[in-house]
Length: 178
Image (cartoon, rainbow, N blue to C red; front, side, top):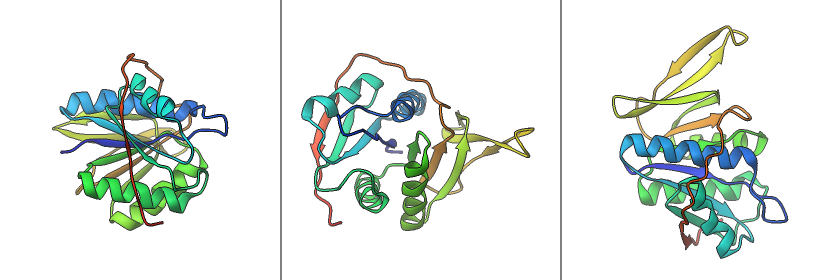
């Protein structure tokens, strides 16, 4: 198992989205329980300092696709699919939001992966991730595991809390044919 990859959304000022930072923190915690690492993907004009700063949320590495425009799903699918395949990531985790849903749907189709959306909690069971998803108008919880890898997990908005650890991440620029 090679780890968990998270997309980190940023605005025009280079500030990262709260839900993305929560997903990074959650991925880091889960990766620790699995005995692996969490990494992030950023696209567009993100400075070295800002990208490396995502390490404060527990990721060890940040893959930066400078050529890919921010805010469009397809370029992000291209970047994430390449990194997941090249680095054998077992899971992708998204913090929620419309763009996250669009990217995750494309990634699921591209990688023939299983997907769970509107996740409120993720647990480690028997060395694998299991997502909890409310069903039946939030009156029940379904536990969702993945038969094969990769598994794509899309959190419900504000499902994951931010937790800074104070570290920096290695930044690697990636070239992807968009």
